[in-house]
Amino acid sequence: MGTVEDSGERRQLLNMAYRLLGSVTEAEDAVQDAYTRWYGLPDGRRAKILSPGAWLTTVTGRICLDLLGSARLRRERYVGAWLPEPLPDRAEWDGTGEADPADLIVRDESVAMAFLVVLESMTPAERVAFVLHDVFRYPFAEIAEVLGRTPAACKQLAASARRRVGTARAPAPVRADVVRRVKEAWEAKDIAALVGLLDPAAVMTADGGGMVGTVLRPVEGGPGIARYMAAIADRAPGLELLERSVNGLPGLVARRDGAVVTVAAFEIDGGRVTRIWVVRNPEKLRPWAPQPS
Image 1 (spheres, rainbow, N blue to C red):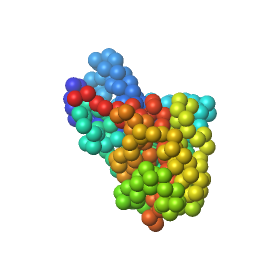
Image 2 (cartoon, rainbow, N blue to C red):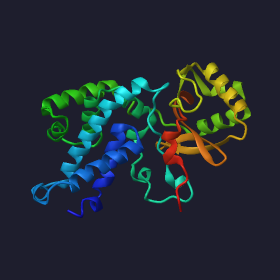
Image 3 (tube, one colour):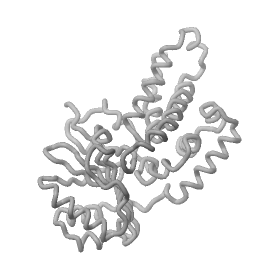
Image 4 (cartoon, rainbow, N blue to C red):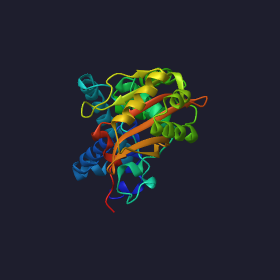
């Protein structure tokens, strides 16, 4: 069975696990756990498995399902808002290599921050049924093996999840020119310009995980967000703002002394920013650290 990892199964599993868990780190751990269980099988039992890929998919899905259940308890104790782990585009950074798990994750609409945030509103079973069926096109018979339910029950779970998604799966494209103007206004501490770029009902959510200073509740309204951003610029001399891809869409990255300290993703509608997701938790920024050459 030495060809499973070479056949692209690992890439597929990692892509699935990231969408299920919202974390590159946890996705990599889940996939590694699945492979450890595979190689831990007795040779005779492993030889009887006709489709190693299907077996690995089922096991990875079950591992993710268990993690999602325990994550709900962890989130109750989490300090402030919890956001998915942002995904970098390694092609934009120097000294990168294919060894980084983030390089293996396909960036499409199903990894957009807006979409991942909606996935967080689902129950663990809904999320598994929806991601496996609607994103990866697995049949409900296979999903039933993961969830331990009937195919009909899995179909109902996916339908319920679909109602939660609504229009979030096809958000308006994030315009790079709007993100650039936000960056310029932020650097200039130009509150009036920021207000003009923000929808009056815009919402900014920040995730510091209790490890770094940030707002614990969402900031609502364009003027309030603009004032907050200007205040941050005042308190953070030496901060370098960069336009970078975040989960496959235009975003902003803040560095201090060469280290990434903040990653911001945007949702834009009608040329104005409607949502900003700001990740500052250092543990969630590990994929953004410089990679060894």
